Length: 107
Length: 119
Image (cartoon, rainbow over all chains, first blue to last red; front, top):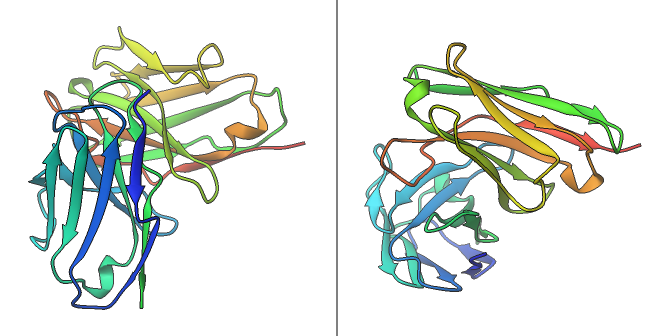
């Protein structure tokens, strides 16, 4: 199975900050990497697919990049509604595996 | 409105069985691969199983293989997960999610249904 490792596990930031979250795959996954946002008690929400494509309806302050084994999710200017947990997922092979999540908290 | 609504969760004793359902609406259910993903309390997301649009192909995580069965009824727009020989480690919120044709991402998720395995 492909292991997905996110860093950091948690992050404190302020409204207006630029934030970057990293996801590393244990082997090359091309660009089969998706990013989800999850708020407490809610289902995951798709933000970015195939590493850099913005899902419809998602604000343009969210962006993704990377290929192969190293990927990043960037939020250019944090808004109050962005404080949540972010998770990467590889869909290069089955089983699709997820990172452990990055909890973004208000500083 | 595109929607997935899970049901069937609950409290079950170790070794017991449960069948989860996921009712789809607002889209052509029979065109989509469908997946089950679970999340244990305080933990991350874990992929469980998937089924092809026509139901002919299924895949499972090693942790549930031989115990869980995924199926679908396209006439009823419903996805199922039959869970047998349940263990404490199966305790989780179970989500169904769809994958659009020719893509590899889960763009719509249900709200989840909670399964608790405990004596």
